[in-house]
Length: 340
Image (tube, rainbow, N blue to C red; front, side, top):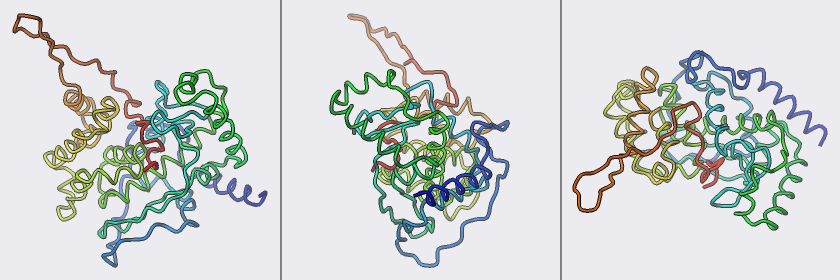
């Protein structure tokens, strides 16, 4: 076990040297210093690709570099922390729908490793779906602590039930530090960005904000994103159009509309408005305008009619002021993402 811990510490140290310091922002929260990288190689065989071998999954996460994406990883992490809401809890707490244990920025603690084959014959990029225990170790944390935390969680859940447990979230004593939660969030965000490439053939050609939006969707929904068949068909429908499709506003409006009509957007309107707005090819030039336009679609005016009168009082649904945290993760898909 000591040799294993030394390996992970060395690997994490190497990763820390390659990645930007947590929370460090460039003038644009979305743009990486290196904005371009080689186009993905053409697939050799038009067949369903197998899932990545178990022994390579975590190694791929630890091999992440800044050049793998155009946006700043620290910017994505800041959004996913969502400190203003239930997005940053330093003790294990239950997911509101499934009751699964979450911690930090909604990172799941008890997910098994799963097979996630690449079913798009035109996309050679595999998916990574390690277990919660593997991600915990990849973050440099002691495996025994995870078992202790899970044991305490199960005892509390049995004593309080899910509803009573959630009412006590704000009173829970921290079980990990903020720095450890950051380490968990970092590897989970890297996994989301990595798997985003598996969902989008042309991920490398997307703008920085579009890459960030897709990575957020993967973080929130995980394998559930594969059920968004219309969205995935549209986002992969520009294969033969080259870079022109990336700048085509009408094309991206259709992509956005496919998400606007989803149950996810209806349930998490504020968060969805921020994420969907990032898909606008002009977002980086006019982020405020793009978000305002999307909020107007997802938060339509409500009409109240007085008795016996035809006049109507139009009231706009309350909307939180836009911020970098507005795209925080939807809890129903925590590490959501991998929940399936």
